[in-house]
Image (tube, rainbow, N blue to C red; front, side, top):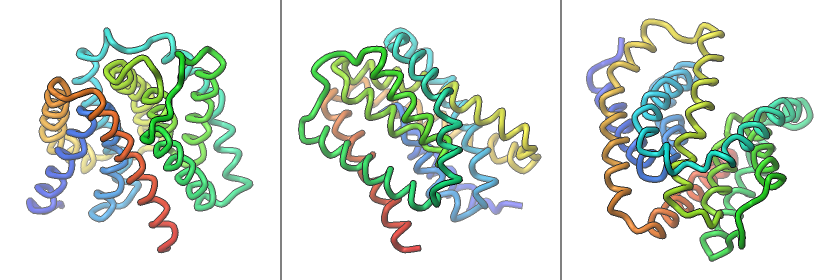
Length: 245
């Protein structure tokens, strides 16, 4: 049985993580996995996060629906679906730590280049979008980390920060629903997990709403810079955790 103090700490973490999710369109899972695994086992944390992400997505999607870039979303989902098995196959050839280290370094370098001013000159075509989805799928299959590739795709696009954030919110709906479905199929949802979900749902929704509200008053370039710096920090944190292990 979880103590009230532990649940209160988890609630604060959930609020902060989903504030960033509402503000940028991504990031909650990275923070929640890193923080909540100090309290509970990863096999308990990941299924919990899927449910919380779905709840936040359903709350955020209505405000993002019209601005989402649907043409690119369908192509990204297609590329991700095709390439996810490739990522799983890579696990048979490389150690997970090696893959994580290489991909984390590449993510940090790409985000740093974008922070320095590198951007796509035009809207990515079908092949480039499918390729981005393929990279996301390979990363998802190899290390359950589809998000960074899609984040870099949208925040380097000339479509704009608002459209990129909206598209990220919609993109993760399907990803999180699939994750929750697989977790349910593996029997990972028990009474304890559902109780934690019910308790943390309020700070999750409050954080997502507060972040979404803050986004309305923020300068687009401020949001973009924050998102890229956050992505670099998360990638470097992965590198340091591997180096320390």
